[in-house]
Amino acid sequence: MEDTFKEFRKGVAERLRGARGELTQAQLAEITKYTQQMISRYESGRVPKAFWFLAGLSENAGLDVNYILTGRRRRKPGATKLNKSDAPKR
Image 1 (cartoon, rainbow, N blue to C red):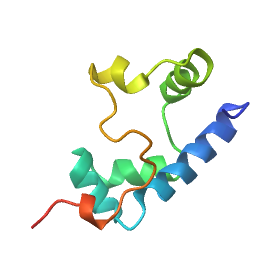
Image 2 (spheres, one colour; image 1 turned 120 degrees about the horizontal axis):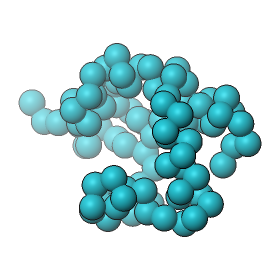
Image 3 (cartoon, rainbow, N blue to C red; image 1 turned 90 degrees about the horizontal axis):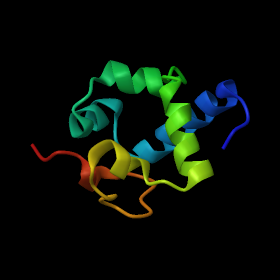
Image 4 (cartoon, one colour; image 1 turned 135 degrees about the vertical axis):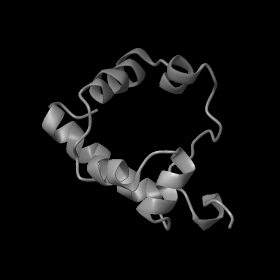
């Protein structure tokens, strides 16, 4: 995990853009039920400081943050990138 919040924000932005893969921001917004504007904000590094806390729980304490937040285990273990097949069908 990055040492400063500034480095963390930059890393989150880069990883989110990479994880979005072939999808547009609008497609990712539809999948996540968030707005394209929120996706854009996060991809430009404007993320809440609470994200850093949650990353610390995962990185430093080894906790499953998805389980803490949702009560469910990860749906796609090891998933790091989405593709067109993950986009909603029209």
